[in-house]
Length: 272
Image (cartoon, rainbow, N blue to C red):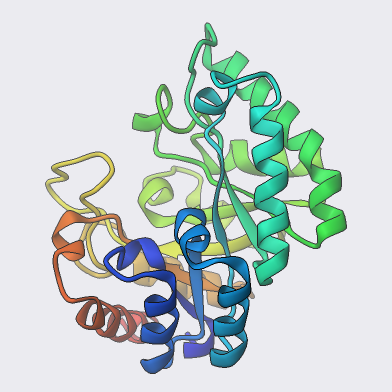
């Protein structure tokens, strides 16, 4: 894995502001940063653009749009409007993809209804995304989150959505959510790789103590992260990788040390 293709998603070091994260990652030679919208709002678009330009960091993803159950509860057009704003923000900072988190069931009577609502919102957003030059990154969530956080739960579902929506849609492949998928090998190979906009790296901690904030550092868990990366590279994937670690343990550590360890682990993956 070339260092210029490696990004750190800033949720990995939430103690840093966006400015601190951009500068901290750049100091250690990382090629990109996955940005969160709340951190971007604190920094402001003009300063964020300046810092990204000055450091040369690429932005594989801006997180996030979606959360449809939450947004729909605020009004009939809230989800649509938030998605448009997210696309515009991504375009402003040169982010390739807006990560789209579908949300859970909310007031829907079934997962089927929640997924139909998700498709409708994505279909409505795709023209705006295409015009802005931003891909809608559909992130399948681990099935334990189906009711509350993400109603798309397998790579097969995500790829079917991409097929239905067209080139504005893509798949965000997150190790935490997809390492268990029985069809994983199939979706790490052509022709499916052309739909993958970014690969988010972490590991599955054993035992997992929390469904959201207990991810392991790359190489410290049950997922075959090295094997996944080797297969991706052998099959022609040339897109970005992002280290994305939701972990109260890692959040408590010095962000500079966390970044250094991320780089060390990822640079050794193909040799593992």
